[in-house]
Image 1 (cartoon, each protein chain N blue to C red):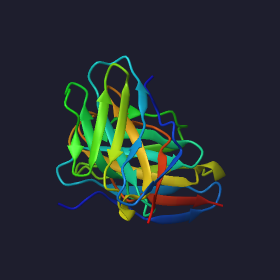
Image 2: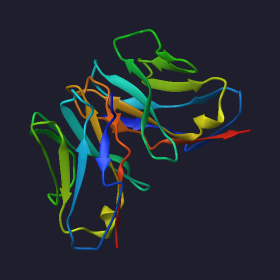
Image 3: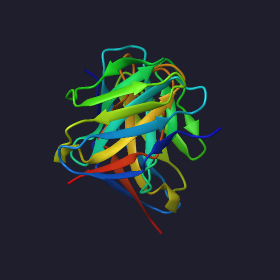
Image 4: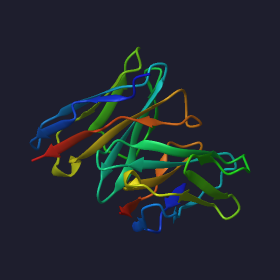
Length: 112
Length: 113
């Protein structure tokens, strides 16, 4: 079964600084998709970024970018120029031939 | 385009009762998935519906059930509620299948007393 591991339960970052959230996964599938979702205190889960495993190029979305290392099964999220509104739980998720599998999440605090 | 909507947003029930939660997907999305989120277990997949058929099912007891209507709206039902069923229940919709991005609703907070 596929598993997703987020080794950092909590992280903090100064406003305007850069932070990287880690995620590793385990799978025997060759074709799959990886996601980062953000869940602010309002609880609405919001898609941050999506990566197709067959694409070597790392996905980017404005201040958010990923470092996808397929061989290492690593999928980290980099947030640049952090803003107060980035404070939330961040979930890494995997989707292949099975429904979405989520990591336990990383709680990100942004310090003004 | 309107997002995924879930009703009600909050529910308080007592043990032994049953509850029905509703989810309306994004227009054009035919797949609807349900997740249970708790502090201890995190996000766990309940089931997925596509074209009114259950396509995938998570590891939950038979007290948890669902259905999908011809307009892709979905409901989930929990019978004989237990204290451990207290959770945030999230619904997500996608166009077709696991290759498509899932978009989540705001969730229904269920409290079982």
